Each structure stands twice: as structure tokens, then as C-alpha cells.
Amino acid sequence: MRGFLAGLAAVAAALIVTAQPAAACAGLIGPNGAVNLLRTTTFAGYHDGIEHYVTSFQFAGGSGQFGSLIPLPGVPDKVEKGGDWTLQRLIRETNPIVRNDARSLFAVAAPQGVQVLMEVRIDALDITVLKGGGPEVGRWATEHGFRLPPAAPEVLDFYANRSPIFLAAVFDADAAKARGQRIGDGTPVHVTIPTANPWVPLRILGLGKNADDRIDADVYLLTDQRPALLPYPFANGMRLDHSAAATSALLTDLRSDKGMGWIPRSGWLTKIAIDASASQLTYDLAVDTKGTSPSRVAAGLQAPPSPTSSSGQPSSDQIALIGIALASLGAIVILRKSQSVTA
Amino acid sequence: MIVRTIVALALAALAASACTRASAAQLPTHIAIRIHYSHFDQTKIDVPMGVPVTFTLVNDDPIDHEWLIGDEAFHARHRAGTEAVHGDRPNEISLPPFSIKTTTLTFDRPGPLTFICHFPQHEAYGMVGVVMVKPG
Image (cartoon, rainbow over all chains, first blue to last red; front, top):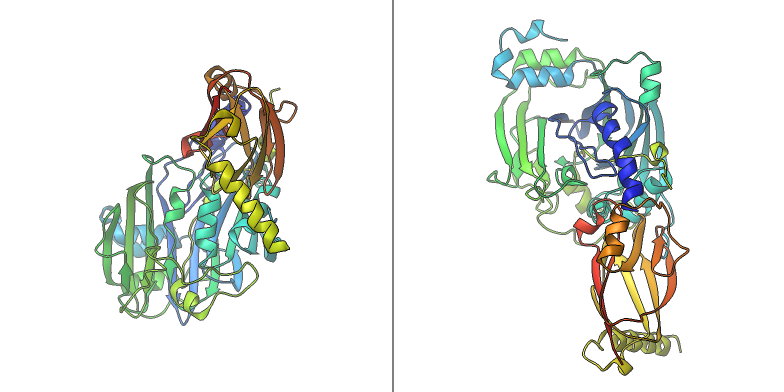
């Protein structure tokens, strides 16, 4: 068996280095367990009870299909193509090298099955929003060609017990090439999620990785006021890189990007850097936008009171702990469609 | 009646798992192994030599697993093997998501054998167990 997969591994490894879509805050894995170590960037903005989550899938050449599963804190209103420069602009805001004149730099008992809430095509990405428990979502993913890593069943349950909403993204590298996308081109995705309070899943970044593998990611938060975060104090590979009132220049710039008209006149910008081994990343980032008491459950430091049923709505308590969140991220997996057997 | 049946099954399972120090004649010949969160729920099992032993394999996970039992040379071959799906041999069982399969083996030599899932990362994740074959 391993050999068959090893054969695939050669294919997969090539795909990993040449055709992977790099989703912000997500890691790609292949059948051989290889992972990419790209630093990724995610933006989670929260205003007027709405979570705005912006991530990007980067075309890196090659062919075939790849997928990503991203847990979400609630049912999105909208999934659409994101603006062109939001993520780049945020990086510039907190990167001292490009601090000059940012304004000019835009650029068994088998589960019942999942409920498909939304299907959206964005460039070469097929996005499906799913509602279901961990087993249901895992089965859906398996049936749709995802090869989930061995930790997936437990991790999917971990998130489904907080919110049974997942976003599955399938990136078609052939379609990307046909569209004329060049290596390095990103497809930004903007997810709008009504929710009570934000959390950002981080544990899932380690899915499919070996204990010593490094995880590098930047998470930008824009909230109306300075948030309270958990875990705190920061440790185990999580670092606070920036925490300050957002500049007018930044807010103006962000507001002028596509779909970003919701950006408020004032806000607080927080940048969390993740530089951890996979074994360290046992937590999520809980955010209390009012600056008081983030949920230990949302941070993954405490189990939910009771699991969310696969068909039920999250409780108000769970919603409270959920918040924005986004999940950035996901467990990414190579689709079996690209596999072959070398009998 | 249903409760009695459940209790009887539970006791049978308990007896099966509690026989690790029993003599070979008392060792179980029906063994259930459950896979949950990519782990076998039993990783040390004693079985008798020379009599058929039936394994019921339950995959509770939404992902594929496999149960391959043999010696180190057997596993070395499978780590470099080429078969995508198993099923023709009683010691090589593929387990699709949420599936149950049964296989019967007769062990003709005493000593340890290892059962492993050889899907990528699964062995390293801990999907390994040992069957100790005990002479009568």
C-alpha cells in the first residue's frame, strides 16, 4: 500500500511544489505527508456583528486538483471574490521595510450526510459551504476525492463541536492555466459571516503535518476596539506583532478595495504571528471584541459543554464563543483524482 | 431482551479482551477491533496458535484505513508495496469509511505479529498493534 502511495507521492510531491493553491493560513499536504511551509496571511475583520474573512489561494503552476477544508464560525451570507490588495496592504502596514508612503503602494453508524448550503465558483476555485458534524463532513470530503490525513477525524470533530459549518475549496490548476493565471497569482476570497464574536482556528494549521514541522502564518484582526485575546500571555509559537489603533491611511486604503466598503472609520489593528511547530499548535485564537473575556472553549483550552449535533444549530453559548472566526484555514488535502495506481 | 443481549455481548467482549494472561486454550477466537480517530482500540492481543481466529474490524472514521497483519518482512514489503486496495488475502483488509469487515486467520507459528495501517502517515500517527500468537 505504501508503495502505491509512494508512487503517488512522486506525483503529489511534484504537485505540491508546482501546483498547489496556497490558502492563507492553511497548509497543504500530500499523500506522502509532505507539507509546504509557506507563510500565509489571513484577514479577519469584525464590525456590526459581521465577520469579514479574506484569504487567498495562490496558483503555483502544475496541473490537477487540490482541496482545502476550512471550518467557519457560522453560515456565511456571501462568498465572493475578494479585493485585489487587502492582504498586501495589511502586510505593508505592519512591515517596517515598506512603511514609506503606503498609500501609493496598492497594488459505522454511517452519518446522515452533510447539507450543502452554498456553491460558488470563483475563477479556478469551486467553493462549497457545508453544514454537518465531523463524520459527515469527513465523509463528504472523502467522497469528493479529498485525501484527509489521519488526524482529520478528531480535528473535524473538534471544530464541528463548536460550529458545524465548513468551507470546502477545490482548486483546479488546469482551469487556472486555461484562464491565463500565472504562477504566484492569487485568488482572493471574501467570506461574509454574521456572528457574535470572532475566533480564529489555529490548531487546524497543524493538520497533516509532522510534530516538528514549522507553521508560519500571519493573522490580521480589525476590530472596533482593542480586543482581548486568548491564549494569553502569548506563548507556544504565538506572538503579538502589532497592536495599535488602525491608521486612517490604512482604513481608507482598505475601504477602497473591492467589497471592502464596510471598513469603519476607526478600528484597532492586531497582528498575530504564528511561528510554531505543529505539536505546539494545540490551541485556537479566541477574540473578545469588547476587550473583556475571551472564551476558553473558543480557544480550544476547554471542551464545549455539549457537542453540537450534526443537524442542529449551534447554541447561543457556542455562537458566543465562536465569533468570527474563521477558520482560516484548513486542512488541505490532495484530491484523489490526481492519483494513479502502479499495480 | 435487548438489554440482556447487549450485556451478554459486552461480557463476551470483556472476556475476550481480558484473556491476555489466560492459557492458549482459553484465549479468544473472536476479536473485535475498532478504529476511531485513526487509532486501534486494541494494540496488544493474545491469540491461540493452530485454531481459526475471527477478527471483526470496525472503521468508525470518515476516512479510509487498512488492517494488515504480518511479520516485519511483510510490513517492509507493504511500505514499498503497490496495491491500492486489499481484500483477496485474509491478513490484508481494506476498510472504507464507516465499514465493518470480518476476516478469519489461523496462526501456525508462535510469536508476535504486527498489524498496521500503511496509509501515508497512519503508522507514524500510531496505527500499530501487536498480536501475540501463543502455543496451545
